[in-house]
Length: 124
Image 1 (cartoon, one colour):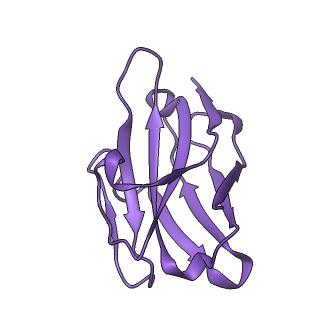
Image 2 (cartoon, one colour):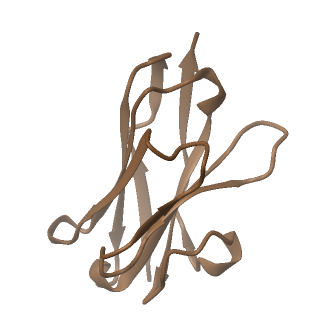
């Protein structure tokens, strides 16, 4: 059974950086595409970006393009979301998601497996 465990959230000042990690267990990580999403209070879940199972392609949504970077380390069964130049409006619960042999899709329903979420709070 696939399990995703996220870590790395916390409180950071505006302009700062954080790196979120998402470790997959139970299956071969290198076969899974990984997406990153966030959800702020009272808002819908928002797609941030994704990386294909091969790591060959990444996509980002416009609000985070140039500030956020998605990567993966298959040897560690872990995906990463590096966030730079954080803004108060980036405050949300951040989720990773995985899909077997997937490409870099933005639809939440595409992903079969989800992490528990980690809180990121950016103070002004």
